[in-house]
Each structure stands twice: as structure tokens, then as C-alpha cells.
Length: 499
Image (cartoon, rainbow, N blue to C red; front, side, top):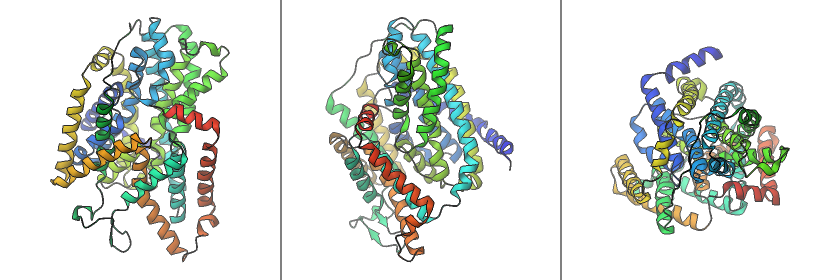
């Protein structure tokens, strides 16, 4: 099938009334959780994983993807109006966005953020569609050694870019790998790390682990800190930017889209790093850098475009290589696997309706977000006034019911509590639960391909450096680790990933 035929197939899937409804539900829910601090896409997707089992694969993935990129929109609303970023990627928007709101120009800031986000999201979606066929063709040439090296590089890159340092990052990833190896050996069938517990013979359930690490740990952490938050809103003003706003913002949107599109593909960079980098680019090339921090519209346009472009292009390594570059993408990969779909080079051929339907739905979802966000600003601000302890009770009940219904076993609830406590301890120690879950997902993939490569080469470990592609991946991962030890990168990583 040619490119236009594949897009037509995706349009047919995305415009199915059921899939349209789930797309609308996803972006609306994503906007709402982007507005609420402490309830991000990771928690929401983790909570909905058990309930997505009963949905068709297309509807389930479209719903979860809509939550992810919808959250990037929602975070800008509260960043601008109340100086309270709902998402980490929107923290940079607070700097100039809230200053514009104080000057009575919140409406212009919100409009620039929405329009820039739509443009960046559209470009990101187009890049997935255009990059898909050639990348899939290249990835089909990968053997076991190349995949093992790719997973190795991805883990190192994510560990290097995570707050807390490289050593801590690698340690948490290794811990996640150990938990991921629980169950039966992939080659011999021998049970390992099960400790005589029958429920562990098939491995640890991904949904239980995700809900515990993110949702339960977040509740425990917020209750322990006693942080309930206060909300004060600013006058919105006119929603239409001035001619000067357009003149200053459109180059920033273009540059932010470029930065976000590039960093979104890289494992470990993510939306937060993209928005921070785009802001620093704008400030460094500005003729009047002193304007930044006092209400510069470029300081809103660039980071909002960057984080939305990154939210789209982050699907590229997940869909085409089967390698998640962020915790949300790890959850998305788990959702694919739950429905019996293995992302990777063969996905475009074996699951073409799902692949192209998801891509087209992303563009439709971005259009929904522009239509929904500006008229519903008042609703999102009122949503901030919901007492946090009400949300905690709802999330806790939702999590327990969801994981219990998966296996109808009390063991699932016990495991949920265990991973909730583990997630809280990791956060308290300054470690990243996101790296734990990436290790959990990527560890078995690395083991399978490493052992297969060693078997094919008859135990010759030089196979990983004799093959050019695998050698490039290994050197790339090591180079990023060395680069991350420099003071400039370390300082930028800490600021971009700070809560």
C-alpha cells in the first residue's frame, strides 16, 4: 500500500464514531489532569490500564494517547493563570505566562499557547507518519545484537538524563530489571525470583506495578507532606493576541517545534527537557533577553510548542523500535502488549489499522484540544478548587478495584500496596520510579536479545562491537553518560526535571 492509501486507512479507523468518542474523552481527561497538580498522565494512564482490557485495541490506545498529549495542553492553563504548573513540562511557562496574566494579558498568553501547541502537535504527527516507513525498513535489518545494544543505550541515556545522577539512575534501572525478570526463564522455563509464590510464576503484572509506583506512591507522598495547595486566579482578558504578539511568537513556535521534535525522539529527554531547552534557546538568541521573566510572549510560545512536539515524536521509538524513552511511553508499551500488539519494525505491516489510526487520531485530538481549551478555561480553573483529599480517596478506590478485577485475587491488592510503598521510598531517597519501570520493561527485552546474540555467535561477546549498528548504539549510550557528568548538562538536567 502506498502512503496515501495508508493515511486513508488511518482516517477510516480514526473517524469511526467509537474511536472519535474515545479520542474526545482522552484529550478532555488529559486536559483535566494536566490542570491538576500531582495528578499527571502517568498516574491516570496507570489507573486506566486495568480498565482498558475490555476495549478494542484501537479505542484503548487512542484513549491513552489522548490523555498523554492532552495533559501537555492542560498544564499551560494553570501555569499562566495561577502560576501553578499542572505538569512538569509546563513549569517553564510560569515564568513569562503568569507575568502576562498579571498584566491583564492572560487571554493572549493562553491563545498563543493553544495555537502554538496545535501547530507543533500537527508537525509532530506528520513526522511520525513520514518517518515511519523508512525507519521501519531500517529497523527490519536489526538482529539480536543490534536490539540488545539499542536497549542498553536507551537505559544509559535515560539514566543519564534523570534527576539524581547517573549512578543512582543506573542503580534504580537495575532494580527494575531484577523485578522484570521474575517468573519463568525465557529459554529454559525455570522459575526464578518467585519465592514459592504461585502468582509470580507468570511474572509481576505490569498494571499493578504501574498503579502502585505512581498513583499510590503519589497519594502517600502528598499526604505525608501535607501540601494541599492554594489557588488564586488572574483576570483572563481578551483571548486574541495582538499583531505584535503574533510577530514575536511565530518564529519562537517554529524553533520550539524543532527543539521539541528532536528531543522528543531521544530517550530520557522528554517534554520537560524540551520545554526548558526551547526557553533557553529563545532567551539566548533574543535581542532583549532582559524581557524574559517580565512577560515575553516568546517565553510562552517556544516551551509550549516544544513540549507538544515532544509529546508526539516520543511515539517514534516506541512504535517503530519497541523502545520506550519515558515512563509514559513505557506505560503505552505495556498497553500495546496487554492487547497482544508488539510495537516494533513489523507493527506497520502486522497492525497497520492500529498504527495509522493512532497517527490520524493524534491530529484530530490536537484539533479537539484547540476547540475545547479556550472556551473551557473557566471550568479548568474551578476544577483546581476541588479539595485534594477528595481526589486521593477517589484514586485509591479506583486503583484497588481496578487491580482486583484483573485477577480476582487478593494478591494483586497486596502487590499494589507493596509497590506503592516502594515507590514512596524511592521518591523519599531521591530516586526515580520512572527509571524503575523502564528497567522493568526493557530488562527482559535486553536479556532475550543478549542471550540470543550470544547463542548465535557461539559465546563470542565481540559480536556487539563487530557489527557497526550495535557498536554505534553502545558508543552513543556511553557518550551520553560521559556528557551528563559535565557541570552544564548536570545543572540543566536538575532544573528541567525539578518538580
